[in-house]
Image 1 (cartoon, one colour):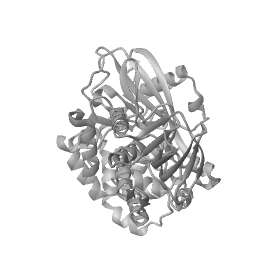
Image 2 (cartoon, helix red, strand yellow; image 1 turned 90 degrees about the vertical axis):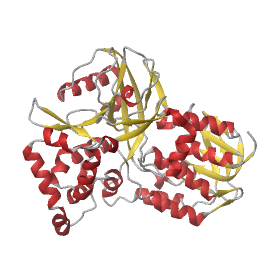
Image 3 (cartoon, rainbow, N blue to C red; image 1 turned 90 degrees about the horizontal axis):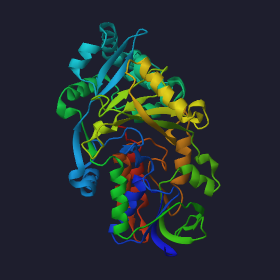
Length: 459
């Protein structure tokens, strides 16, 4: 590690690694600093029960822009698999009853499994949407956004309970901006288009690496190092002086002068370094409970989506169903995602208690109890930024950060967003387009940041 670098990247998640790789490929001297003892962030894969699993249910989406798809193809080659989705969504009914509909939504399945009365109410809500939007007075809430676009039935049955589960607040107490960035189907015409597309096998595909989602960050790190980038893990930034040539002090006493700092670590940490506490945005986390099952497959379903308030997990996925890979025969793993806030009862529960919560939830929605060999738990503290109606904390934080000299903020943690992988890789490619040795295109980057704010999550 030298005392200077053209680019210092803070944070070795997918956005940081991609930024480093692209800059190093152009001959720049690049240093990556990561606080954890490994790279990848929430995009990494881990080993549970001898099987490679992800930190939650992740997939690569065909909607990725061509530049991102080209990067993924370059990294993964033939390891990119085109898969058909086999998800399903639980619809809560009378006690003791369970109904499931395929997800993505498809017409034949909706006709078979959605109760006639419910289907009629949803259809009426969609048909009267334009009238409802003209008469409504938006209050800036998540609930108002859903009610205006999809109607009160969709809000009551799915979007409201799921929002409460993910963010820990009622939809009336959440910002409409969270809904806008999360819900890609928000109107009758979009709903019909999505159902028509999902009714065709070609319309419900996704992309997935043969060795798991973490193969993306593993290859990014390998290529970045091979291109000359220095990757330092297990160290934090102890001090940062922005400016035309920013200066960073690492916690081991090393000082580095940079041509540009690309900050992809949590924005709160940057604010703390520079004495600007208004960068803080509250986040909701996830507790991931992995059940090692004594069966080759639990079911053909890749992910069960569960908005029910009485069930602790929001999604239950089976990683083995996401790919054709080198997985062990005779056993599989289920991953339950339990939304939690650091310090609450779910976050603080022990492994046995968490496994029991998952099994009780499976009982409640009619999923059979599997034979369990083992259980493992991982905790992710910062997954979903929490904003209330009219809450401008994120805007104020980014307004300050985007005004720093010599420092650019990007990535999921840097920009306080819950975006997809293709979104953060898009940010890295955009940053590379603004970067040259000794210079940075401020006007272009400002335009790119406005474009980032239009991103909507694919699920």
